[in-house]
Amino acid sequence: MDEKYFPKKVEQKWQQKWADSGAFETEAESCDERPKFYQLEMLPYPSGNLHMGHVRNYSAGDAMAWYKRLKGFNVMHPIGWDSFGQPAEDAAVKRGVNPREWTEANIDAMRGQLQRLGISYDWRRQMYAHRPEYYKFDQWFFLKMYEKGLAYKRLTQVNWCSHDQATLSNEQASGGLCWRCGNPVTKKDLEQWFFKTTAYTDQLLDDMAEIESGWPANVLKRQSDWIGRSEGAFVDFEVRTSGDTLFYCDLDGGTAESGTVRVFTTRIDTIYGANAVVLAAEHPVIQANIDHFSEEVASKIAFIRAENTKPTDHEAEIEKDGIDTGLRAINPFSGEELPVWVGNYVMMEYGTGAVMSVPAHDERDFEFAKKFELPIRQVISEPHMEHAHHTMQAMALEVPLTAYGVLVHSDYWNGKTSENAKLEMTAYAVKHGFGEAATTYRLRDWGVSRQRFWGSPIPIVYCDSCGVVPEKFENLPVRLPETAPFSGTGESPLAKVPEFVNTVCPTCEGPAKRETDTMDTFVDSSWYYFRYTDATNEVLPFDPEIAEYWTPVDQYIGGDDHAVMHLIYARFWTKMMRDLGLVTFNEPFKRLLTQGMVVGETFFDDATGKKSITCRVMLQSHATPRERSQERSEKTVEH
Image (cartoon, rainbow, N blue to C red; front, side):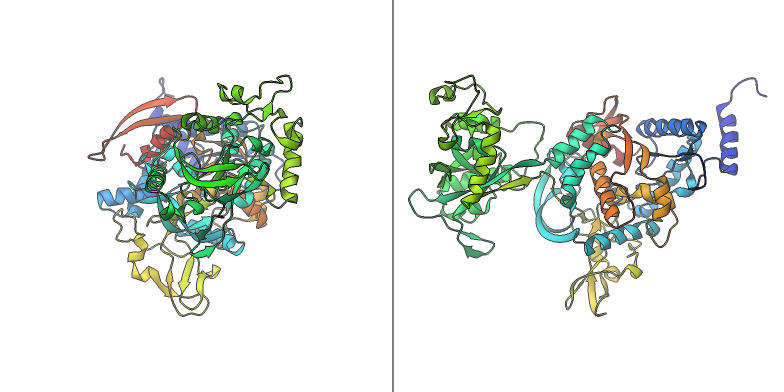
């Protein structure tokens, strides 16, 4: 025996023994009396070499795996590679190499590092997102969702990163910055494929009750805020010009009478305090009549619309701006004529793109009214403050009264509590045909189209005779070509590969064209943890019986920078698989540990595009959008 400890000698010896004996290999044994334990860390992107952030994550998971084995559990501890995505293609453009070669070389290097660290993985279960045996089932899931109406294509205004020449989901553009490179995001009109995450909005919220004891409260809160369920009512305001003529507009390319604007409100009890109706600059009523506004109004609307395409930090308040359009809206409860404004704080993608402004009882509206000297009328009073609602006192409010109370200046509903008035006033609006009870959400469907080469091809064919045709299951995988003339521009590189584009229609067998967009890399990481349970299955993504033994994951470890990206997508995917009959439960991860991050402070040189990096440790994982995008951009840096 050596008198001293020689790490290289000792560790190599035991690592070899573990490998030869299959010490960490395990199976789903129904007759095994040991309880199972599924330990999982978020899989790495093969960017070149492991860094301290990786080691911090994987060593914590390995400690848990060892502990559970020693406690007598049947432990599965797998690893794989999140190997599709934009950085590999960017590296290929920069270096003049094939992203496949770059990715495989990085995997070899990182796997060697993990093995030298002695982390107790069952290496037989490796999955590689970029290999056909895996992305075949990305495509399989796409077709299943297409059958169920959960995958669809439409023309939409997308988030666009001009630096990376790529589309981004709302989650990936949070804070107005690209999650990868940290550069500003703008808007662009494109036809895109979407997954209907909104089909599961209520379940995504309600099922949090199943995991609240095992997940960090701040992660659940961020998910809840992002999904943003609001209970309230739609109310229709009749719109007129400054005279008595009804206002008409041209919508969707045809002439249509639009005598009303629909707003959504969670506080219909405050409607007698409305001082204006405020519309988004993109609202159809505004855009259909932009040529009829004064030059001053049209110019201001164009300015607001342009400003709304610039990056914003959702954690910071923007200065309120707007303009009176000259249109007038009739309050359906009071009959009062209200000005119709365009405001920069109203967004078309949220709610109806129209709000009623009630400054005495809403902080945002209060700020807007103070800036533009709009009238303030208090219509909710605290029960013990009989005179606090007088108009002059309302104008002098330093802060709005946002709490529930008793209605004043509200005609028939004076003296009623906010809770009762909300119910009664909603019923009144329904009865008289100008409103309805409603629930709205902040969450939007997941845009999964990417104009990139290095991703899973979307299994859709376009036929002049048959239209949009899904590929046959037996023809999967639709293989990614070995290469393409990619240049980092916004055009899909696959469109330049004739042997890929030109195909045969699965329905009529006539000539057809393939979809040339590829899928968002987050598709791969939405279900990989199920593939580990049955990693060599060639018929199904996994055997449901095997998955039933191992899943849900008992302990998941990773950064909370994925609270409104990967973790929401994975929860959505699990519910979709449940509805396909592949799993029997609602939530994929019983417990979640957000271990904190080692992040790079990345500074961009606008002239050269070069980055300089300093490193710091975040022990508390409460990153801002900018910090989260910086952490992600670290993946593109050579180590």
